[in-house]
Amino acid sequence: MTIKKITITEVAQLAGVSVTTVSLVLSGKGRISPATMMRVNQAIEQLGYVRNRQAATLRGGASGIVGLILRDISEPFYAEVTAGLSEVLEAHGKVLFLTQSGRDGKGLRRCFDTLLEQGVDGMVLAGGLRSVSGLQEKAAEQGVPLVCAARSNGLEGVDVVRPDNMQAAKMATEFLIKRGHSQIAYLGGKSDSLTRAERLGGFCATLVQYGLPFRTEWIVECDCHQRIAAQAAENLLSQYPNISALVCHKASVALGAYFGIVRSGRNIGSEGLDSFYTQQVALIGFGDVPEAELTEPPLTFISNSARDVGRSAASRLLQRIDNDQLPPQSVILQPTLIKRGSA
Picture 1 (cartoon, rainbow, N blue to C red):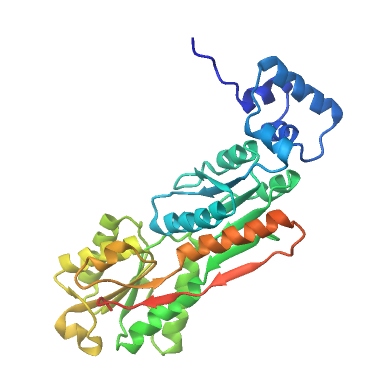
Picture 2: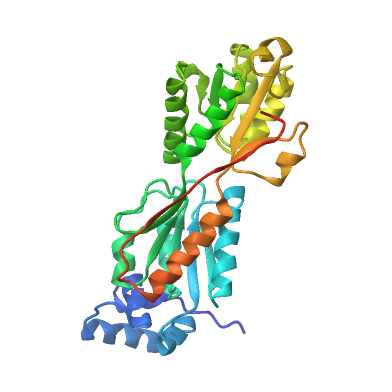
């Protein structure tokens, strides 16, 4: 016979309260009225709910778990952020509880409630998660500290650790200009991405700084899948053959653009002013992936130090867990150029 496991949601339904309230009772955090606490405990006893991790939290004051919410672990940048987080947290005896809200972020609140149910000691919100309103207040009610990692828009009063996207774009664009390029396009990302907005700001500002016009038709929005990026790059070069360099929004876009350039009949590389006659297109992207060294020529990237973002976010969260009175801090990590043969 299989014994059905009772969930915290069922306890909340029987007690006539929210899942958050049950979690508060289980963790011993927050301000709950005696009457509500009694109803929740009665529901727990009646259903036979097993407290598991919450009971350990109540006894020891800490669960040893840190929660992470991101949209998609398959994205190389966030895989590296996760590795950096785990590396530091495990060294301090913490376990990382990973949740994914999905590419569109619709599962964010479900992930958030799940982590609160587990009695996490702290939580990291990674990437451009949307609809975060109310989460900060909810976490504060339970005494759960938050840190934003790699978010372009930090929450008011919450620690944030992120790369300098504008500086990265300035670095990429200036590198191409100094190599003799003046016909430079930007490929990839969606218009609602704040990271893309920051990078475009750096891209356009650098063109203007050097007296070069930026053309809106050379700023192309596209999905970050390699196949779509390849088609977008091929179409762009076919329509505007005088383009001599591409700045790519992500590593996956740069890899896709590599094949798009080849399919357009052009070569990858940088001969600066002679690129129009040699049919070469310089290629540079943001991030870095192992595949970048397998292409011919290998791809040039501006590294966003993803693993360092994870390490720094973990270190800050550990400080915040130990002392919740620390003033909020914004840590911006500087990019580095990884120069290879594509630009």
